[in-house]
Amino acid sequence: MPFDDLRSFLNALEAAGQLLRISDEVRAEPDLAAAANAAGRIGENAPGLYFDNIAGFTDAKVALNTLGSWPNHAIALGMDPATSTRAQVAEFIRRWDAFPIEPERREDAPWRANTVEGEDINLFDLLPLFRLNDGDGGFYLDKAAVVSRDPDEPENFDKQNVGIYRMQVKGPRYLAIQPVPVHDIAIHLHAAEERGRDLPIAITLGNDPIITLMASTPLRYDQSEYHMAGAIRQSPYPIATAPLTGFDVPWGSEVVIEGVIEGRRRELEGPFGEFTGHYSGGHSMPVIRIDRISYRTDPIFESLYLGMPWTEVDYLIGPATCVPLYKQLKADFPEVQAVNAMYTHGLLAIISTRKRYGGFAKAVGMRAMTTPHGLGYVKMIILVDEDVDPFNLPQVMWSLSTKVNAAGDVVRLPNLSVVALDPSSSPSGITDKLIIDATTPVTPDDRGHFSQSVRDLPEAAAWVERLTTMIGAQR
Image 1 (cartoon, rainbow, N blue to C red):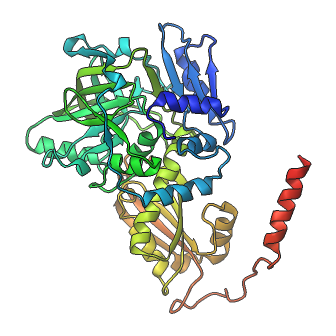
Image 2: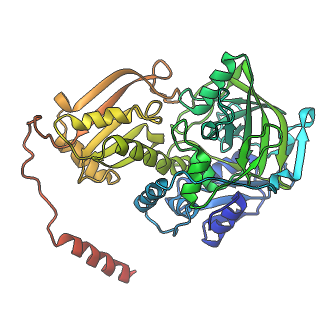
Image 3: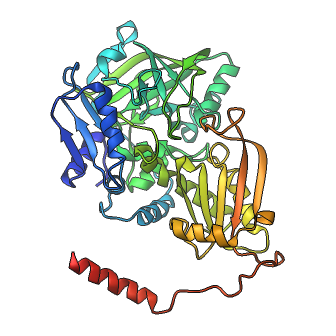
């Protein structure tokens, strides 16, 4: 049964033993972020965290690390918590092919229970705000789904974007937002500012896990996150109409914030501890004016800890990066077998492919860098043979150490775009990209001595199963 809101997902996590309710009094800083940080250090089975006794706040409820493990990610997909990472990615790919599934519009959204407007808005009263890392420049909303529309085609449902963007609280009713240039909201904002207009937006907090996954997934500009959410959850996604903007927003959100990105207004935003494990510094960023907030009674505030990997963000965006890259590459190159872009939001991608001819793998690598995600993120690609599992790092390291001759297998592409959050970019947003061809050369690229590779014995697979069964029986 798919989850229509955050609360039903939290209940499912608790039923599976994957949610810790912490009722002892804790401090907003540093305890909340430190606990989420710690969850990323205790292994791949870490639970979600729920706090309801926070010093200095009345009736505050905070959820953290809800998607911060492979069991929790599996539960979000409606799968057994013990499902392997590779099987989760495979199921994600299978469901992808059901796109599009039309959403279901509902009228009784629970966030309609309470409303505050205009000068009465005060984010500090409504939300239990806290810093995620000790060097952050302020409080952030970093796990909200932000909805915007193409100013040229506001009625085009497919060009309505749902994305996750960090937003710094700048005052009781103001936020600063970082619209990365390759992301759809940046395209929308540019079009609005070209016409001298503000860009209306809706910001939804405390969402079900599938729309959070979809808001993190690099779809094409004209692919609807709501259509894909229906495919991934295997049933129509529930939406409702936001009262001020008229935008389509998740039905089950805890909080819906509506307002505008004020055209051509910029303020200092940052620094912020990012997914790269480094602070991103301060930058001049667009400003959001909030005009209306609708919210559930006793809303649950959900936040996302980011820092040195792995943290929740890596579980959240790992498969959501691998799958669209795989599907987009597979459409152009059927030879592509698998894509592992789990690491640091796909700044590094490992691609397994067959070859048509010498040099073919490098072409696959260059195509990966021109996908919607590749333009801003993929800066290093490792190509491996079709019989190498890109999720098996020892196999990948074997390919690198035995197949690569730097004289012809390493391609450096200068002065290409990358997300400005990449701390190695210089100047910010520009980098040299790298393709490493660790595949076996094929004609006419005849070189090396690869004709006598050692293969697993035919009986090895049966022995793997036999030994696994025997080990399990001993435990």
